[in-house]
Amino acid sequence: MRVVVAVCVLGATVIAAAAAIHQWHPGWQPERTPAGRAVIQPAAPPVDLPLPTVGAPAERRNAPAAAGATARWTVPVGPGPEAGAGPAKVPAGAVTETISETIRAVAAEPDPNRPQSGSLSVAQVGYDDAGEVTLTGSASPGNTVRVSLNGQIVGEAEADAEGRWRLQPDRPVPAGQYRLQAEEFGGTGGMAATVSLPFAKADNTGDLPLPDRFVVQPGNNLWRLAERFYGDGLQYVMIVEANRSQIDNPDLIFPGQIFRIPPPASGE
Image (tube, rainbow, N blue to C red; front, side):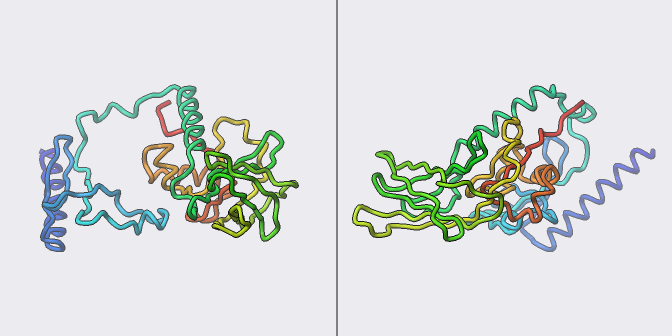
């Protein structure tokens, strides 16, 4: 009898919630899925969104939905068919290997959100074995790229036939935060383009041999990194907690910082 009463109360709660949302937005209708979850959604094709979370990066909280789309929130109302099985147990070594492979894959792909002007971009930042800064990017083939930090020129490089350039500053760069600017010059010497971005020379470059370390790249943000590393942007908090000494504001991370990427949660 107690079980029946509890189920009835839970069902009534979900129905009341659905009714309240329906009154707020008449287009919303409840739908029950095979997994035992009530989905409150409109008739139009929805866009799945996580419940708004305090502290999530602002660009994700405020991200607009696609044109003509509406949001859908999934409300748990009971255990699914796999309830009680617990999380899948993954050997610790396999988790570490997976994170290491993902880190290498993410670092090897320039972020499409990096600053770019025409053909000019600073695509990747990194460190050599001695901990010195290395920069790579794109520009029109044959053009010269001049790089400066806080207004001081630190080197020039020429884009190759495929429009790629690589530069190592002509002197060691002390740890700290900088404004990095790249300027592209054509054959006549005139400036063709310029891009500017923040850069942080890390003071923990000695950690880089560790397989779970990742150098933040131009265009990265915590939400998209969590999507790549864990398949869920909300897990950005794991990266924040693992690098609390470097992250004062989750909305502000800087190319050149070196983060530890913890493995995803798994069974013992």
